[in-house]
Image (cartoon, each protein chain N blue to C red):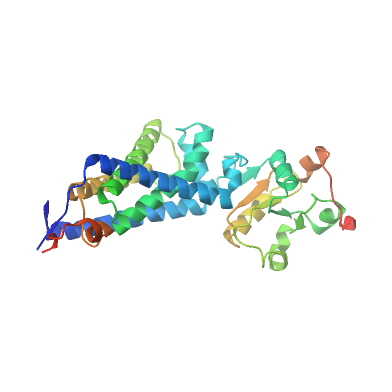
Length: 166
Length: 155
């Protein structure tokens, strides 16, 4: 029992290789534009500080807020600090109460939703721990950390929101 | 071209195996593009702008190539495309072995893997590609359904 095949010519083979590459690039482009356009726009900063954490700068966060992009901004500080003032649009999720807050805040949020987490400033580690927890425990795919946190936001004279503004 | 049946069926198994490997590797990276981009950056072979583009598009090329191999469509072209991919990976890993870099491979996940093991894997996959290229096509493939001559096929 043998199998017989025709031998395609080399030009056709190479043309098809090119088509395969173009199909791959096209699929990647469509996926990126739909789901993670910020990667193509160069808004993601590739930091090597924590291998599994992606950081965003103040400028990127401002752009995301101004463009009214669909993001979930999470304030990882205590409830007290949050109520005194936070980045406009942010929701509060103190790290130690994350399980309780996540049930209230995240149950209806799609796992593909881009999330940016922040805490007090460069020296706090809560945002990193919270980001890890959100991606590993709750399965969110695009979780980033605004490293400068509340400190950098206030220093940049950006608008703030208190709980009384609502 | 007449291929002994045993060899042809082995080819089918190898083709499906390589297709699954490439598809799986692509999907893992697509699910977490940022982690993959960081690994590409750690390889230190491309400028930053290209790192991002490479990190976005390479997994999709892997996935599409894997699908073509898995379904056996355009056999030779899919095998050549895979050969190119594995050759690129092998070259990138070899350069970093020579540099003495201690980096994650980023092949089928984002855990640390010994680069020598990765290089061996890539060489095995390259041999598989060579074997498949020599076969030209295999049974249980779309090529077999669409492009074999009327007198051909299993006989």
